Image (cartoon, rainbow, N blue to C red; front, top):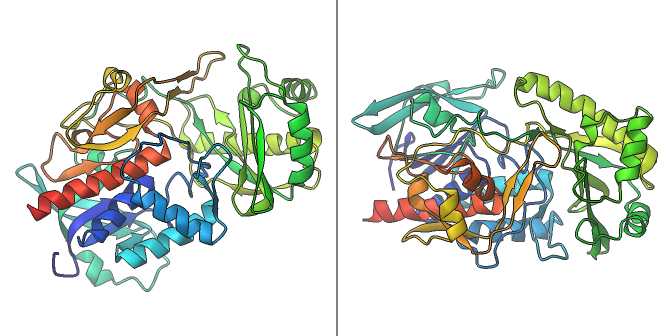
Length: 431
């Protein structure tokens, strides 16, 4: 709707799962939309952190057009499958980068990759404009004159995940997330696996179908399995991890959490939701170093103890940590655990879900996966800044308390909240 190269209806800062959904839906409604993304690709946790597959949510979920379109386009490229439990969130992260580019181009969303916000102009509780800088100093084709001009927009959306834009302009946050946090992961993928051999062995070795499953889709075998160091349940893989620790292949901390999933369209690859890094007080630099060394040991464990991994190798390590909880904004409404458990309904919900309260702990037998017995809704007011009239947040940094956020942070819910916010913004502009 706005005219001028540097004038927009909506600027989304951060092109992660919620940000891309919001931007795509805004543009589909005819709003001139820009994404400012610090990476060289979109997708956030899916592509940068290798968070695959997306968790399954309610069959009654709302605001699903973005998710459905992404899935359909990925499926056409053999980059997405629906697993046997009906979960269609099994994505190929590399193809997701490409499909998101296609979707943004088709919707006419402008995208500035490798850029960050460096200046913000504010007046009377309203953001008037931002300036952005390139973080790619080798890009000689950038139009420096164009980017030196302020970028004006009616609305701004923080899709950074950590509420970095809110932090930059000194917004108020809820309680310090360091006091209520969860361990992070550094995920990776191994390839060169004889998945047929591994699947046959695994399904015989672990009879617990709540833990280990396999199915065939498009003539390829897809599987899932898990193990944790918790002693409050029995894990079939426990003897293998115990032996690996005794033989010095793994440390005890390496074995605290282990999940494995096949990757859509790659018949010889498996993705790992591991290692889970327990020391949340370490710097990100220390966690990356610790995580990559742990990945090496886990890969050696797989090659030695898991049939089918004999010729396997590490093919990908996540570019960013898998973060479960971070800064959370103070919004027009603070969504609570009590709201969630009660299934409280709202006039303007952006999502409906039944995903459990999922809290990881650094201690044995202390993680929580609390089932919810009513579907819950999240109101759009939990995405609206309490400090500025034209500022919103989407993703894990929304206005919710610690336990509620632990249920809301999954990828399908992030897709829905981005889409729901786009509809709210469009309605406001139209009126």
